Image (tube, rainbow, N blue to C red; front, top):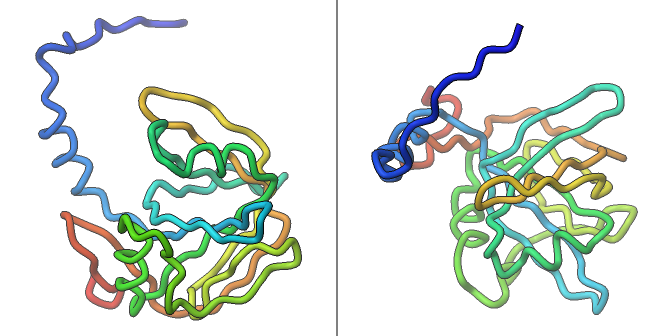
Length: 169
């Protein structure tokens, strides 16, 4: 049985209130990284990360359609999702900034496919760029995990518009 519910009138929908409601959901903090064809590196902060499937191993994240980095992430075959540890709020801020070189002063190594993996993260997932789904003002990226590593430590969390450490939760 399928039931259709009436939609809210868009004129009555308050985007600021919606954003405030979303801020009440605690999320982990990730930095998505990739390497361009010319060897330069690109990274951005994202809290829109989730698991999708264990078999095959799939994860997802999303990026705004108007993001300057959209052509790179939509066109690259691989990327790494870095789960930030509790002491890496500075990296979340740096990769969320408008800086030209967000990797300035950042320690990293390269994965087997040449993607940047940030040092000191709680976990990382090297993903094949399997699928992309445009929805609203974002594109949902589904990555097939080809390799992952974990360093069990406290993770960085974003809640109520601020960073907190998991031991504070």
